[in-house]
Length: 269
Length: 284
Image 1 (cartoon, chains in turn brown, blue):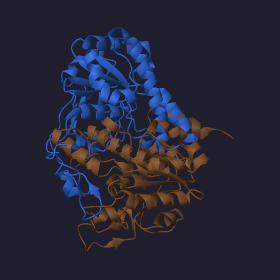
Image 2 (tube, chains in turn cyan, yellow; image 1 turned 90 degrees about the horizontal axis):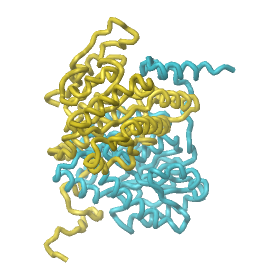
Image 3 (cartoon, each protein chain N blue to C red; image 1 turned 30 degrees about the vertical axis):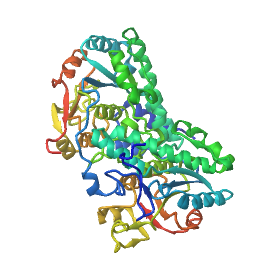
Image 4 (cartoon, rainbow over the protein chains, first blue to last red; image 1 turned 180 degrees about the horizontal axis):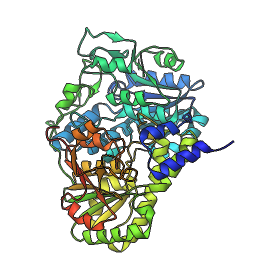
């Protein structure tokens, strides 16, 4: 058995002469799933955690109930304090990279709170530098809490419009699920899923149970349930081509989503 | 407690506990809300210059390419504050090839490549050590950069952004799209630096790879929209730079120069066109 593929690819990369298309042709090996049993769950900041005990405690109970059956990487959103920090930061003229650092801090606070509520079950919380320990924690304790915000900090790319960091906690959690080849990506929010408009402002907004990324982009909605960068990333994804948005205020939804049932909006690329 | 201070107020309408702010209760996913956040940016280090030194194009060639450039950097440091980012070069390409063969995803490849660029940063840091210019790992560099740059004439970092396993899967293949050209540009944009220069082993941008096609035509200056329209198959910089420049608020351009002609460094830092300048469109 020869190693021609690797030889050709190494040569192309070292010589630097191959175009992206040529490189992609040489890239024939499938991408492995690093943690195929793990489910990435994003707990919303403004939508869940900012509601306090009433919303958070039942969700924590449901996470604990699912520990025997499912491995969970639990990322946290940032929420209203991030909005406050962004508002003050924008007023002071902060660039996107600094706003990204501020958002990261709020996401850390939320991760810490969720972690303390789960601590008695032996569930740890990790920061980006500790991600290498995650497989052990999942094997030992079935779950692990982490910061939802990607650690782009001062290197956060600007958005097309405005100055708010375009890659926030929806994107950060999504990228964990894509890179690690996780079993699912579940967004726990306070709405049933995707609507044709923000249902908090438009009572006539229509619910969409299932949609593709292309259909979604075609609708060109003014407001969507997930950060727009997630949709582009899904189109390019090697592993995670679908995500689900569920209402975490309804008991049982997380369990059903973990069991693979559609209970909210399923978005596929 | 100051009774007048704006307090956190409970808004019973939606049962979420908000902190009063301009973006309170707003969806950060709403395009209209987002356009309201377009305000002027404070430049943090407008007197600094960011240069990226190619790994494969310069550092991997050893003494003959690196020493003259280091001499030029040494001279420039008398007049210019430099933030120097390094590329990963051959070792990054090698580890990428092995990683792809092993089936590893883009995010893991990005994490691996950061390590080679950091190695090159240390090589350069050793040569510039007498000037107090050393390699600083990215986890320390971020918010400390203004402090370091006041204490030394320059700092060296690995050029990659700290995306690591949060790197984006590209449209084709799986090579990390945000590499060292992009990382140094993002840093220059966030800090509002004076210039961003990519130091390579070619004079700048050609309409084809000049190493393969001797008839390739040199392009001295081009805008983002022209570059997008021409859709050149090979570029001497990370393709994602085009989008990053299009969305830049502080940086208006970047330049590619030939590091094998080290005398070009200082004019480039003064803003003279001595290679290829890629310009953001006026209106965008």
